Length: 287
Image (tube, rainbow, N blue to C red):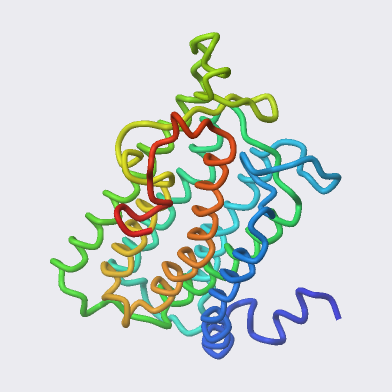
């Protein structure tokens, strides 16, 4: 039996309610990746922590774009092929689907295209990212397609959640632009490297980022993304009602918090202690 035929026979193409509920039950166990990442603190072959490997995708941009596009495409496919829906998609659901796609328009296309360069990605990371995005897009797409409902969510709650989403997205873009400017800037002092104020790795220059929430944490773009998706869950009725969005937030925390710790260690190991500021990993004043 071909893989596609198997998925059809098990109700995953298109996604039936039973298959969707099974997916959600399994998706709750994703946070178990956190202790695995903590046990392998030096293994994250992507970006500034990447290293030479025969399994690397030669250029980071194509791998990133390929990986991230699966999320919105899966969401839209799952919504459009929902076998139980008989009428039009509620306006609130259309709005939530639009917010989701706006995020991934930036994450999957605009952000990597605007980067001057991206570190190589290990093929393992690409596969893991594709899997995460397919499952997450299916979970939220199933809910928006008819297995959940935001019909009774008051306008004020949708508005507050949407405002949080936009604020988080803006914060994510703002802090990513600070990192992007560091890569573009070549006007650094000749003695900066000797003083430990910049390092070179893989043909790229890294400096200590400044501005915005970088004053308090090393990964403010992570923190802003959690605010973004927390607002998304609120806009869909709250953390209990919009369970797939809640699982998305929890699962992002499970995989990104260990990554933030790794980023903090990277700066500590590569920059002079004399110039290294004291910052939390990702959550101001907490972690």
